[in-house]
Image 1: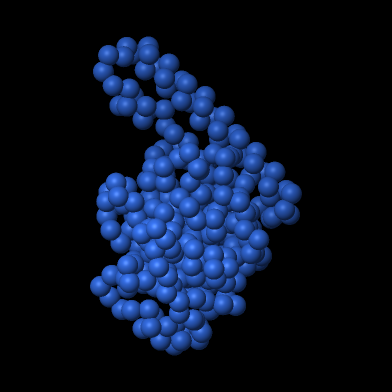
Image 2: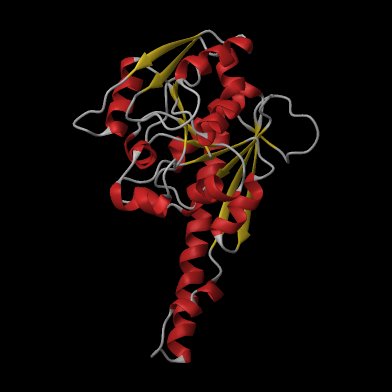
Amino acid sequence: MAIRKLLLPLTGVAAGEAALVTALMVARIWNAHVTVLHVRMDSRDVAPLAGEGLTGTMIQDMMAATDRESTARAHAVRDMFDRFVAENGVTVREARGGVGGATASFAAVTGREADLVAQQARLADLTIVPHPEADQDASSSDALHAVLFDSGRPLLIAPRQAPASLGRRIAVAWNGTAHAAAAVAAALPWLEQAGAVRVLSSEEYQRRGPGAPELLDYLALHGIAAELATFRPVERDVGAGLLKAVHDFAADMLCMGAYSHSRLRQFIMGGVTRHALEKADLPVLMNR
């Protein structure tokens, strides 16, 4: 299946530039349309969070401050978008009808980010999100987890710095789970046109399900000649071992399932998904 519609939710500008570059690279590969979505927080949502002991005036002041901050952030994101499309010669148009070449549009809405992003992602072939900032816990990224858990669609996490290439050398992390299978299905268009594909497996990563050799047979039926490599944990960390194997292959994309264990367990104990979210320096295609 061709990729025609991309969604890029942007809440700020900290990691937005690299995400825009990544989205444009994807759009140019697939002649796709990028919808940049900015969700403004509704100041009325502040009131239930204010807690007891605050007067009506104090709550009104908090709502007014939220409005001012939201307006400033929305202007900053829109300015970044306008500057980016102008500097890169991107045609700005609505996503209607056939798409001829990479195009983009901007939309600003007000509401709860997780709900609105998940809803919009359901009719996008791929949602691209900025890399969680270094000082931000990846487990608290609302847009990222909304897409993973509530859209039914694949997600591409952009790296902190824009990649030099994308989709030429793809590493597939395989552990036999339904989540890994969903990620492979989402990645098939990429895998079919990649120059090299390597399936990465590990005894410590494998769960109950088909093994990596069976995945190679499946990919071969799609005309994809993949090679197999095993990896070991680094200092007993499976996620670190996986990323080392990805770098050894010089991959420019990693495909993997997300949260084979519960999200709460990964938050408390750590896990491969969380390690990849926080530490990967290349685009990561995830699904679950």
